[in-house]
Amino acid sequence: MGLGTVVVTGAAGKVGSAVREALRGEAGRLVLLDRVPLRAEAANEVVRTVDLLDAAAVESALAGADTVLHLGGIPDEAPLDELLDANVLGTHHVLEAARRTGIPRVVLASSNRVTGCYPAAHRTAPRDPVRPDGLYGVSKAALEALGRLYADKFGLSVICLRIGSFEEEPSEPRHLATWLSPRDAVGFCRAALTAPPSTRFATVYAVSANTRRFWRLPTEADSSTAEDFLAYTPLDDAEGYASRIDGADEAAGPGEPQGGRFALPGFTLPHLRSGANGR
Ligand SMILES: NC(=O)c1ccc[n+]([C@@H]2O[C@H](COP(=O)([O-])OP(=O)(O)OC[C@H]3O[C@@H](n4cnc5c(N)ncnc54)[C@H](O)[C@@H]3O)[C@@H](O)[C@H]2O)c1
Image 1 (cartoon, rainbow, N blue to C red):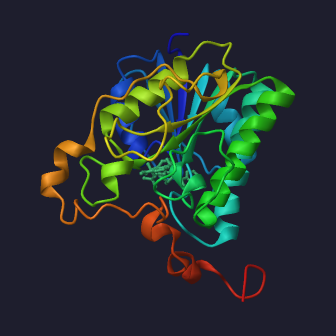
Image 2 (image 1 turned 180 degrees about the horizontal axis):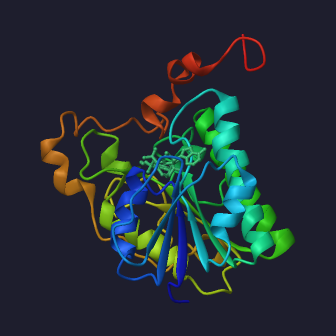
């Protein structure tokens, strides 16, 4: 499957900017969506200011595309109503637009935080039950469930990338396990966009080949089902940066959560509102 017309949502963001630059020379047409205005930087780029909450605008922006890379949304802990809007309803609009306009492949940006409450010693695989480390992780679990629904019920091909910590370089001890380098991020996105049409549904961890990683890579030998396989082997390893990171030798204890500080109550408590969302 080659890259034809690719829609990228959240194209103004961190991951979107890196992928945009890399795919510009490979896609026939790149349709870049965000709620903040963007400027076309190449002849094959089309930019559209679209709020994911506007279903009709999403559908009109997706029409005619071959694939969608859905990166738009809130990338961190927030009140649940905001996360449900941006990450769940927004994703529903993208999948529904893909169904209605006949786009065969949708790649969804999920997160490692859907399993952040597993202990560090647990080598987590995509088929393990979700254990979100916060409300953000809950919203991404719902995103994955929506993807599965659209694959099972409507025959879309959906690939969920559980993105690690996307950073130029790892800068804190947890990154030694969770880092996703920019070139590996592009590699995972490209592999997901071009996976064979026979891939109906898959969920994989998009993480660099970090020596200390918590998660199974999608090409590792025991990753044998079509639902946790993607033909990309990451190239970078955070270990090469360990000597520059304070506290690199104080690895997370085996029983500590993979989500680190994100998994602590204090990370979520400020986002619980009185009334509908908590008291
Ligand atoms: N950066 C990471 O380390 C990381 C880790 C795990 C998962 N992810 C996921 O990857 C995706 C991209 O992450 P990022 O770091 O580039 O985030 P980012 O915040 O830099 O980019 C997200 C983009 O989505 C846009 N957006 C948000 N709500 C929108 C709406 N309602 N309508 C239209 N556009 C909207 C924002 O304007 C922003 O440009 C997100 O879905 C995030 O949850 C990122």
